[in-house]
Length: 127
Image 1: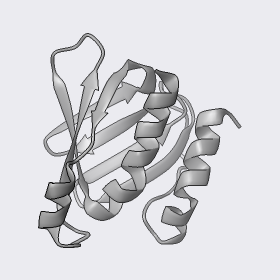
Image 2: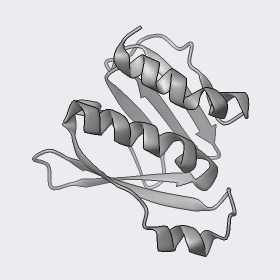
Image 3: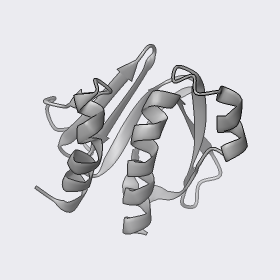
Image 4: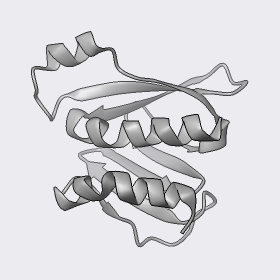
């Protein structure tokens, strides 16, 4: 088990136990072994060994962790407006190295609170 897989499994074990996503048993992709998958309505996010895949509004994309320059976390004021409603959508911006296009993840708060910190840690560690 590599370092990224350990981080994902250790960080998201409580989310899986709470029913927020599941360990993936899908075949490998171009991004390596699929480790964790969460589906909520029209959105599916898969975290793999070398990157992640997002399918949902407003766009579908896959991205290697080492291509990400920054993850723009949602400001605290925006969370306060949600008033603890875990089904409300939170937008997270993904900025890629050397690419002007910005990618947005739109995740329910219950998913955001579990997954985005893991993504951020992986990207920061690989920077």
